[in-house]
Length: 150
Image (cartoon, rainbow, N blue to C red; front, side, top):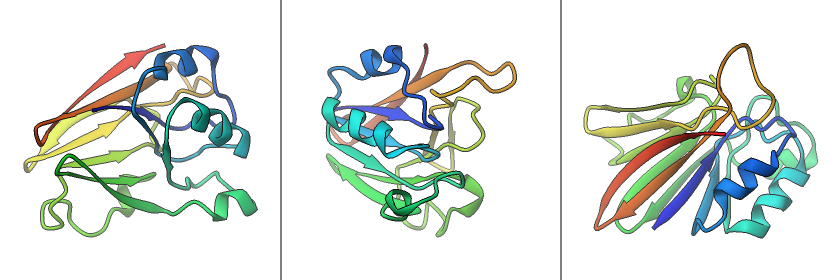
């Protein structure tokens, strides 16, 4: 299963981001969506799972949970916008993957047997950070992630 990871769009869904997500089976948005229109456009590409970020306001944003727990092919995934708000401890909660945004810094790392993925920001450029999104591949109970610069 190939899952597209996107975060911090802040109301800007770039055409190259939509193109990069074409063909994924699921999409996860790690918050700071910006507008309901971004969610609508992503839902056209694939089934969407999204959390509310600290900059998501309004009635549409209140419908988004602050944290999600998903499972694909025996891989438990926690999605949250700001890693500082993550509870409980990922290892004791049996998460294999934690996906978070907020920092706009793309990152794939492993800590304590848990894969942490920040797809970076696919929205407006912040400072000199790259514009990125990510992919999570789940196969036979194993998850792997990579970042793609747009």
